[in-house]
Length: 148
Figure (cartoon, rainbow, N blue to C red):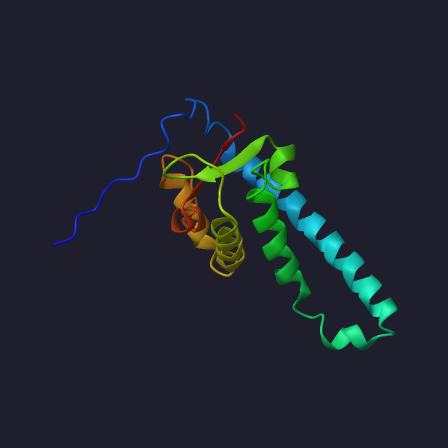
């Protein structure tokens, strides 16, 4: 017989750690979306010019690849946030311990976030969750809080 253990946020979080997180996350996601798009456009243009057009056969899936590494590397880095999240004074932590998020969790969270766009009602989970976590946060074991 299995037993379920309720997960609670790390005890080191401040009481106001979740204040305004939803709105800030939306603005941060828009900023990051634009930044990833600019990075992809620069990389795509440079690659096409340097390969005399041969890169056109390889580059169509470039945006998801850049977004995957962008989120994975920035969130698992020392600042624990993407540039958009830093701009909005947010950071991502592991849900169980409140520590820095490993690359795998950060990258999985990004993939699930982009997949969630195909099913928009999934974002409504954050309206009923006390920690304002979306389903992709819950599945990847992370929580987004105000910078400490």
